Picture 1 (cartoon, rainbow, N blue to C red):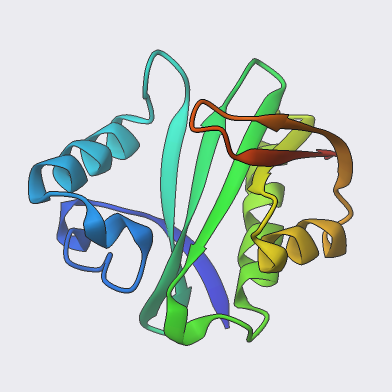
Picture 2 (cartoon, one colour; picture 1 turned 30 degrees about the horizontal axis):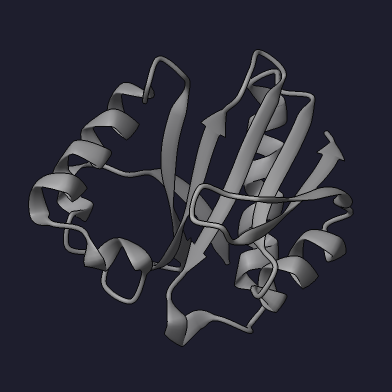
Length: 146
């Protein structure tokens, strides 16, 4: 069974196997505090731990772009990828976002991230456009009505 729970400072060592593991202890701590306070750069922000039974298998980032638009980004630990967990976790995160009043979800996906592209398409997101980010990488913007 998959469920989502808000993170807290006890989760600081649970980031292994994710891109967050590359962050310094202080950066992780600051990110968790922002999640607890539900604010980053004056916008709603929250990270939810993805649990499979009693094991944290990843995280879901929620970030508000406006009163109605939110992005939900999965970060599933490598060992647990390709098992349908990302799909279930993002489905739960989108329901959570809808309960919070958001009506549109977006996903910014690197053009080389075929797993994330497939996930967003499976979840019913539509490709809106492609653009180059500040690092010169091509990003696909997916959008979905909640």
